[in-house]
Length: 266
Image (cartoon, rainbow, N blue to C red):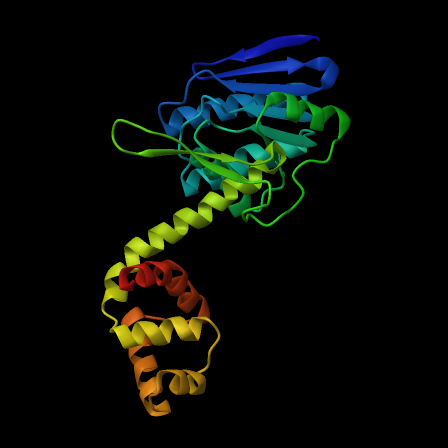
């Protein structure tokens, strides 16, 4: 395998495999600032323009930098679009050790609707298989708990934090990472809206959860043995207290607080 190191920066190393027309980027350490990160990417683009490989592989195991929204746009304009112009046909990443950091990388391409659609792999070997044999990986599936998913408690560290293993097929790594976004988003919503939800009376909470489950006002009236007028009055109060503007808001509150409320009343 003909492999040559063509760039050795403070943080980034670029290797060119001419026979595979492949660039391989590996982070020696995480850039110390967004400025350093951008400088390394500009070096990457300059060498990409010079050698024009058709494939590019980023080894992200040592990468631990959160990319802000402005930089995501900068990456699309100053890196992705030029590299596409210079001949990139395939882009792959080997995921970071911190999967939440890698979620940020995935969102870099999602939010800008990038001209390049990368693939994400757990190992370099998988990425190379995709490059060389065009093996189909990561078919679009919903980021939900699948039959072959296993979640186990590994250990509890000295600070009392649980360390949990999630075992899923390596070929679904992108969807596994994306699923964390929903979990974290729900946690954030719960934290931000807890005070508003606490302002509801017990009856208002009941009506909120019933409505979110698809039960209409007249049915709620019958089930709770209260008048339709009373149900509608409660509903106006619920929308005002929770600042509800759409059915999506209703579902978010129900998903965030229903199980918690049920446990507290048992």
